Image (cartoon, rainbow, N blue to C red; front, side, top):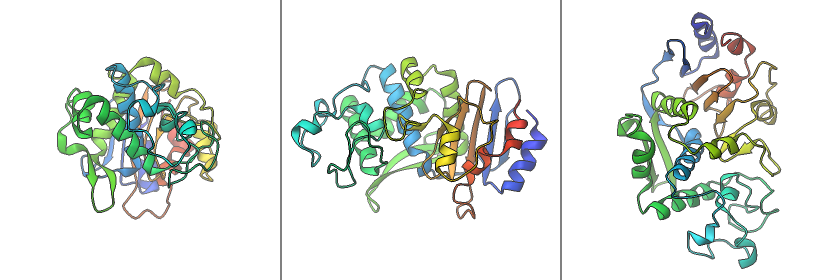
Length: 280
């Protein structure tokens, strides 16, 4: 890892924070990665990790029917269509529903990211474990990794009526390294994350992006050929991201300033050929 080159890249990109780990080398840290802030861009990826851990702990399987876990008739679908919804359908965001939970496409194929589905996924975890979501996070991930509670918390924001993630980039980075280690997660789940989804957005799988080049193209960013083919990326808007590659044995966390001039700043950095040249 060429740490001097990465430092120059981070400075030129004006990122808020950047941390890079290749296991055989010393960590590269740029700016304040210990600062706790809202990390809502990374919340879907973290929920995906919790389901990967949930399968390992035998609390939930992605094939489970949603109506076998939560109270039926939670959508505006017909009973027949609602019965088609599995946990995996929600994780892939292929419910075929709009924000009002009404049919707007093909169940199991039409991909649309809807925050209300993320809320239902949290409800599924809480129902199956009989624990609040932040206690699940502590038990399965935070405590085993020695992360301080205030450095990674999921809380309900009554003002905005949605779940929020408060975390430091250091804590997010530890979770990324844990994904590479795979010890805290179900192995078959991690393998499934790398498979194309059977949907209109095949590179969005189990709340992560498994084809970085396709993701960059979708966001109007020209992808370099040097992006690792196995790169998994957790992000929502592209302002912040966690990316891991087993091929390069690397974990990266990138955070943009609170008011970035480039809305996809983290993804822009992933699209830099210079970054991948510095990570042989």
